[in-house]
Structures are given as C-alpha cells and as structure tokens.
Length: 500
Image 1 (cartoon, rainbow, N blue to C red):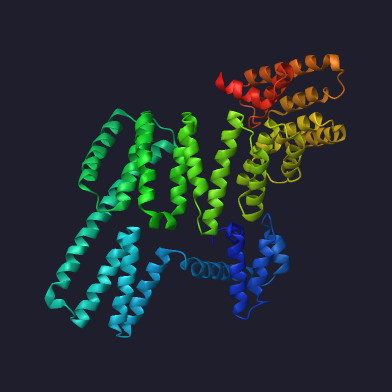
Image 2 (image 1 turned 90 degrees about the vertical axis):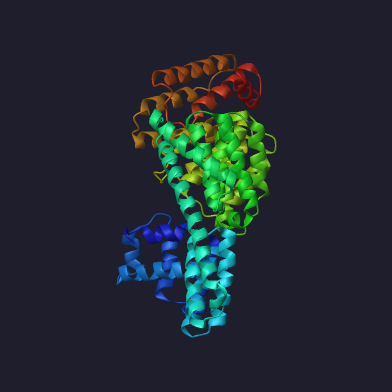
C-alpha cells in the first residue's frame, strides 16, 4: 500500500458477498474477535476514510495491522474467486504439478498439467501453455516415458505454435494500444500514421484469412480495425468490425465468462457509437443482448447493472421514452441497494433516474430521487450534479403544489450555492430568483413568468457558450417551459426537439 486510504479503497470496492466471505473466512479460523477483523469492520463503516478516526480506535501498530489486513483480504479473495476463475485454476494446477513433481508423483503431476492445459487452451492463454509445456518436458525427461516415441519433439513443435500465437497476440496488442492512445486524447491521425495503420491492418487482414494462431489476436484485430475506422470517420466500417467483435465473443463463451469486464467494455464502445450515430435499432439490439446476460460473478453483475442502466436511462431521456418508467426506477433501486458502486457512478444513475421521472411527469417520485442527492451533498464528487438537482426538485415541487417543499428547497439551494462560491454563482442565483416568482405569480401572469425564465436561460447559455455546469438541467427546464406554453407533455416536447 502506498497511500493511507488504499485499504479503505480496497474494502469499499468489495461486493457484499465478498465481505461476507472474508468475515466468515476469518471467523472459521477461530478469530471472531481478531484485531484485523475488527479493523476491517471499522474501516468498512467509514464512507470517507479518516486515518485519525481509525487511529483513535487502534492506537498501536496501526500501519502493521493495516498491512496484515490488506494481505489477508487478498489471500481470502484469491480463494473466493479461484472456484469461479479458470485463470486461477490454471495457476493452482501448475502449483499442484510442481508440488507433485518434487514428491516424485509423476503420474499425478502429469494429470495436473493436462488439466491446466485443457483450461489454458479454452482461454487461449499462451503464456500458461508455455509454462505447462516447460513443466511437461521435465516430467518426460525424468520419467523417460515416451521419450523415444517423439514426445519431446511434439512438445518442441507445440512450443513453436504457441510462441507464434503469442507473437501474433502482442503484435495486435501493440497496434491496438497505439490506436487507443490517439482515441483517448482525440488526436487526428497524421498522413504517415494513417499509412502505417493501413499497412499493418492489411497485413493482419491477410493473416486473418489464413487463420490466426491466437484467438486474442483475432479479437484485437477486429477491435483495432473498428477503432481505426472510427478515428478516420468511416463509421460503416467501424460498425462492421464491431459486429465481428460481438460475434467473436459469442464464439468464445468460455473466455467471455472469464473476462466479462472486457466484454462489457467492447459492448459499451459499440453502444456509445450506435447512440451518437443514431443507429437506434442496433442500440436496442445491444441493450437486449445485455439484458439476456447472466454473469455468475457478483462483480460482473455489478458492472452489467451499471452499464445497462446508464445506457437505458440516457436513451430514454434523450428520446423522451417514458413507458415503464416506474419499473425502471424499481430496477435501479434494487441495483443500488444490492451493489456497492462508486459515488460518482451512483450520482449519475440517481440524477438520470430523477430526470427521466421528471420527463415522465412523475413529480412526486422525482422529488424522492432528488432527495437522495440533496441529502448527501457533503461529497465533493460531481458538484455539477448536486447543483443541477436543486432545479429539478424545485420545478417538481411547484408542479405538485407542494409550496412548503418549494420554499425549503429554495433556501437550501441558496445556502449550497453561496457556500460553493462557484464561478457561475451569479447565474445560479438569478436562475433561482426567476423560479421563485412562479408560485406567487397570478394565473394571468404565469405565461409571462415562464417566457421570462426561458429567455434568461437562453441568454445565459449564449453568454457563456452553453458551458454552465448544470448537467443539462437548463435544457430540461426549457423543455418543461415549452410543455406548459404549448400545452404538451414534457415527453412530447423532448421527442419533438429530438426530431428537429
């Protein structure tokens, strides 16, 4: 551990089932009141890490105790995940083989190596295959079993094939990394870079036709070709290659189960592109694909929940789709209660859920979701979300004629904005002052107040070039105003603006 909060970060990243396993693991060892277990529970209870607070409870040898606990957690998690991870099982078989070889139990050693080899071949794990090959040669030379029948020669040829696959894998990985480097920093490719990528990809295309020795080289080739075409804005080719990426995952289900996170990254890249290029039929097919996934690993279930509902909510918000919104709210509620996710991700999900409920004009429920953020504004993460949610709650309170909540929220918002001293403070306060006029405006003047508020938002956005950090709440407020002026639902306005 390098930083004082590293242990806290590790513990907070653990799923509930992982924490339960660790606790039971420690207790099975007859250590129910062990110091490291008490330390684990104390750190787990802290939402924000405080070394001083922990030191009050554990004044002696805290640094050593934290190191012991860190190592104990990692040992326990290795045991926990080894039952589900083929990669971990390969390592265990290799360790077993080494132990059995040293005990001169060569037949059992060979059996362990064969088990490891079968798993490694399923995963396309060339590094493990080379290690297995190396240990297998020791067994053959020691026992002289089959040595005169060309077994060593077979193992040598096998090494050549595996090494070829490994070289293919790293060649495509290098090319992929170079593409990603440009994509991450949004760099335009130079003419020389384009020619270099074209040449390398053409050579790999030829290799693909012959057949890759490595399944991972094939995967990287499709990924790299897709991302390259995205960078040069050949979007049809991008979608074609990422279709191949999805097919690859379908053909390599064993690896997909092992590396589900990588699968989610690929499908997220595809989903994002489909959304931006408005290929909504493909987008919905990918969403349905995600909904059919049933990962057994709790961590993978958490990742699936996060990505699935991030995209479902953004899609529904942007297209004004409000059918089944209460069911979506129930699903998000269940996921948030079930999984331990980062504060920033939780804030995004809660905000988007509140916005979708706002568009659906489920204002009472929108207020409930808004309160999740407003009641927890101590966190300094994503303050733009904390700012924006006040306006959503104010309008929802106005729509439900809950003027007591409206006034309380208005006072709370003023305190929050003045405390933060943001560079756009004057804009926020003017925005609030315009909203403040709504409850007291006579019915005959309602339209005038709304038009004035809309003009203020449009002028504000034009003055600072639309960069007010309100996570789109200013735009959503205009949609709400237009729905009142045009006597349409907010969802209808969102759809109409999308079409225009």
